[in-house]
Image 1 (cartoon, one colour):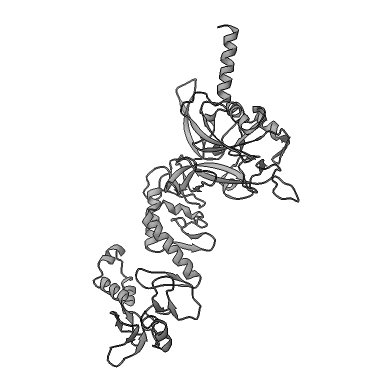
Image 2 (cartoon, one colour):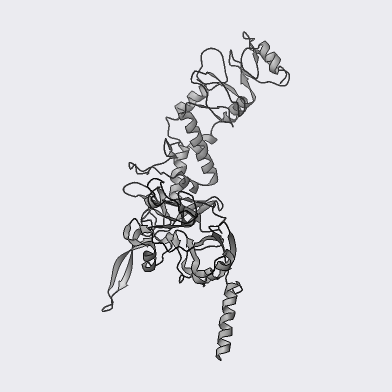
Length: 483
C-alpha cells in the first residue's frame, strides 16, 4: 500500500466519523443536550470513545473543533480516552455538551487542587460506583503454597428503586443535577461517600454549566451550588429528564450472607431495618410482616414519617422513613395500606369516617357537630357519637358492636371468624337499604314515593325527612319533597 492509499483511507474514515456514517454494531441511541437549548439524537457504537462522540457532535452544535466540546454525564466530565462501555449509559441516555472553558476552579475539599488538574490525575469511575457498602470475603491463594487466605473487600452499592412505569422493584442508576437550576450540566467536587450524602440535601457541592453564568448557592457568598441526587430505573429506556424512580435505600444485596430473622434463610436482595443492630429480613418475610400488621391495624401513624412500621424486634429509632418501601406489597395490600393511612390521618385531624358499609369516606367536621352527612360519598346521615343513623335523644349502644367487642377476648383466627358470622350479610344489607327513624331508631325502608316518611311503629308515628333524617318541615317540602 503506497502513501496515497494510506492518506485516502485515513481521510475516508475521518469523513465517516464526521458525517456519522460509520458502520455501527449494537447501536446505542442517546440524546446530546447543549447549553444553547439544542438537542441532538445520535446513534453511537458502545466501542467508541468520547473523542469520537465529540467529533460527531461538534459541527452539528456549531463548534469549530472537537477540542471545544466538554461532555458531562452524571456529575462527571468524560475524558477523550473513555469508551462508552465504561460509562453507565443506557438507551435514550441524555448527555450534556458545553463549551470547554479551561478556567481553574478551586475545589472546596482540596483548595490547592484545581478542577482541571484533578481531572487529569483522577481515574474515571461512574457515579453509580462511588458508594461502597458491606464486606465480603474472597479467597486469595498465595504463590508459595496452596493455602488459601481470605481477605475482606468492600462491595460497591447496588441501588434498588421502585419504578412506577415497571410497577415493581428494579435496579436503579444514580444521577445528579444542580440543586439551584436543576440543570444536568453539573460536575460534583467529590463523589458521595454514604447514603446521607445522597438522600440528604446540602451535602455535596459542584460546578454548574447549564447556563452562561454559573450557578451559586447564595448570591451574597457566591459559594458553589449544591448537588441534588436522584435515581432512574435501569430496566427500561430513559423517558427523559423527568423520568424518576424512588430509591429504596433499605433494600440491599446480601453480600454478607446474613440470614433472615424470621425464616432464617439466606437470600438476596434483603431489607435491612434502620435500627442500630441492622436486623435483616428477606423480602417475602417483610411482606408477611406488613400483612400481619395491616390485618391488626398495628401500623404507626407519625407526624413526620406518615404511616409506617419499626423493626419487628422492637428496636428504638427504627421507623422506616421512606414509605415507598411498602410498594413491595401486592397491589391489594398496598391499596389497603393507603386506605388505612388516609383513615388514620383523618382521625388524627379530629375527623370521622362514614360508617355506611362500602363507603368509609373521611369527613372533617366541626368539633361540636353531632349530625354528620357524607357529602362527597354516599350521602348517609349519621350521629357522630354512636356512628349510627342520625337520631334524636341519647345514643343507644349497638348490640352487634358490643357482641363483637366481647368476642375479641377470645383467641380466634380473624379470617375464619369473618366467614363464621351467620347474620353479618343480613345486617349489612339492612344497613345499606334502610335508614333508622330519628325518634325510635326503627329500620325503615323507602320503596318509591316522596321523601316524607311516617314511622309505622306502634306508639311512634314520627314524621321525618328521608334525605335530612330530621323532623319533616316546610324546608324539606320545598327542597326535596319528591327527590
